[in-house]
Image (tube, rainbow, N blue to C red; front, side):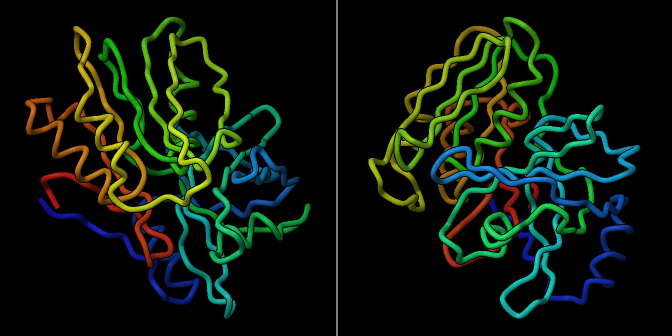
Length: 263
């Protein structure tokens, strides 16, 4: 098994725009309407545009935001569309706060109504697959926007379970869903997230799949996600029913790792 890494390219903005267009991603000039604090470590940026025709994200998909670094150069940052209200033309992007050390946290903390940001998308394979009798979502706090974006599209009484590691109980959130949802929150009691989370890896190792066809979604730190997927595959869980993506790893800013057998 190997990992395909998407590292933000240090190319000029026009070069990145051309790359995004070649990938079939539509360009959007979005405007900040407001920012708000959801929890002590999660901040929401709400965006709009005069024309969002064709902006049709599926639950769990992301957009590529062009955000400046400390020297003003634009780089790609993938962020989940937490929600989209087409009638009001409002897009919500939730950002985990890491002090002010990353472009995304600086953007989320410093954005003011009227500020503009260039975005491409929606995009991403992180969507609900049909045909599941139950679904399991396992990850850290960076996975909450993607997990909840998917969970909130589930039909009434669909069976779903989530196991989410957070820094403290203050980081808990509530999903607005009619699904039969159970969430287990694993608090680190104030400690920062670390690679190869023992509790998240153990949560998968000890998980007993219920009857029927299940789909499992693993998001978060790359080495944790890789170990979780390996554990499931070793136990005979169908690879096609596992979605695994690394959202972060130490000493890297931006980019995702697709964890599967094909890269």
